[in-house]
Image 1 (cartoon, rainbow, N blue to C red):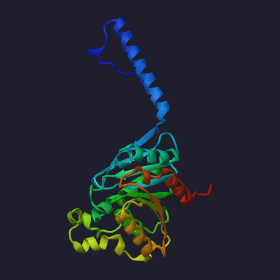
Image 2: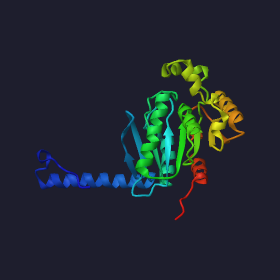
Image 3: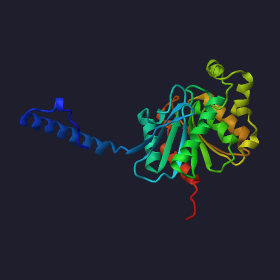
Image 4: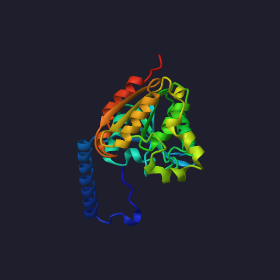
Length: 271
């Protein structure tokens, strides 16, 4: 795109013009070289307010979207979590380059899956379906985001929700280390108990597909994930993929495995 130059800032001489052109040429060459090295995805961004919360949708520019990935962010992050650092951006690139749209919401910040955040994610899923017009919807959660994602998966009867993947998930609202933050997000203990994934009726997960990426170095995450599989694995397809490192370690952001798993569950509409 040709840069616009304000009349008050326009160069007054040919020498100045040549100098400006030389600088622009240098910038263009540098940018092109950088693009060749990093091979960035060309994104289309979908930015709207849903249920009072800011959202971000990312898809590949000038490409058909084959499915939507609803991302449920973790603690102290927001709708920008999937592009906030190199490891998350790599996963987003992997999904978007394969034809998926990734969409996330601020969803009340550190809401720990409370009813208000669940309602926001419901509205987000509806907005995404209206915008992208797809049949395939996947849930992808990280840490705290798994609380809302699990609850929504349990209540959803639509087969359009193909499956849920969670990265080092929080699956039990009874985890002591988060008790103060959880208490701030809910009105009372009754509300906490009813929203706790571990208290849900196993029948709600019949036929559901869930994949957990769990760090062997995080004992609380491992214990919760195993307990979740033991409780619901008789009716649901629950797989655990081991990774390593502390919470947030890039080793648990396994884009290749995630893409393969989504593709296995994808359904195509007959032509």
